[in-house]
Length: 178
View 1 (spheres, rainbow, N blue to C red):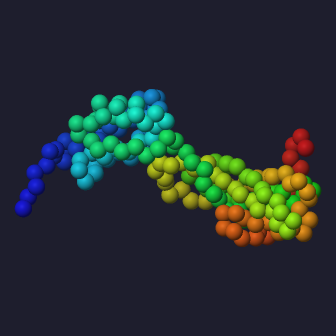
View 2 (cartoon, helix red, strand yellow):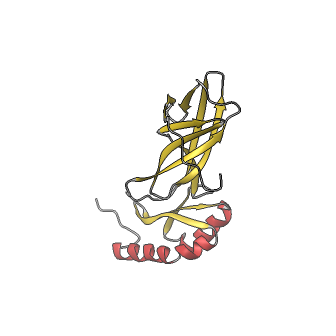
View 3 (cartoon, helix red, strand yellow):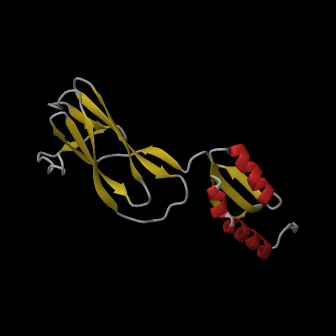
């Protein structure tokens, strides 16, 4: 049995090129295409937008006659938990060291919860929700939290993996202006 199709392969590619040509203009309107290409049922478009209803209307008006359109969320960024490798305590400051990946990730938030026996550290990165490349490596960075009390003998627990982390015994060089 042979199924008939609405568009030929050449026509599908032309439609995908039509979508790609409008991606920058759509981004200016706050509609970010995260995926567009030939899908099982023709052209498939996935997008992010803070105003989902408006974006859906715009995309339906432009591409609805030949595309399946799917909303993926409001933001093209998200926070995600991230592990750190080691730490250093200096008085009330606790520094955690980690490798920032090289695929558009940016430092997020570092916070600590203190108990009598431990300090639990949660580190997050700001990460891109869209397509990724396979760029390898990392940039060595650190984050600092201020503790209520000096660390002393308390252990430091990495919340991302629920593991204690080793410590450095040598102080960091002073930052300019410190």
